[in-house]
Length: 201
Ligand SMILES: [Zn+2]
Ligand SMILES: [Zn+2]
Figure 1 (spheres, helix red, strand yellow):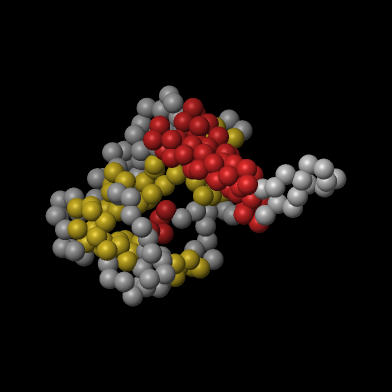
Figure 2 (cartoon, rainbow, N blue to C red):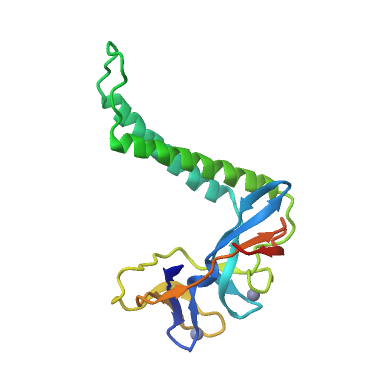
């Protein structure tokens, strides 16, 4: 599979890194259940490099998912409220495309929220901090939230408000239209974030 790749660079040194490290599906083994492990680009003090790092679930992440679900639900409530009631008809009025779409969004948002809550429960006794997904070291920091524009390939590198530790340069992001061919693998981790095996797709 070929996917567009984003490149992180530093304004003051040769550092250059693709975001491809975050690709693929990672999960925690929790009894018989697989719970999605979230990853994002971050700084690993042990690798002294940008890498994919583990993003542990927390209260604010759960709140975001709750708000998303509530927003879809509120939009659906409005649509239902303005839909004429044809109560004397034998058949229900046809649902609009937007309504069907929203019902799908609500279902998947509710599933995401439930999985997130279960992941928080599963990790509640966890001792270790978020780990680097390359070397397994703790104490990584996730890059601040930033947009990745995979389409605007002519755009110049955009600073993401993160200073290259030990260097002082600004980290920027750019997509130059390059695509990478990757075979995405599933990777399993224990509840402390240690990789336990690798399964070919
Ligand atoms: Zn630098
Ligand atoms: Zn590392």
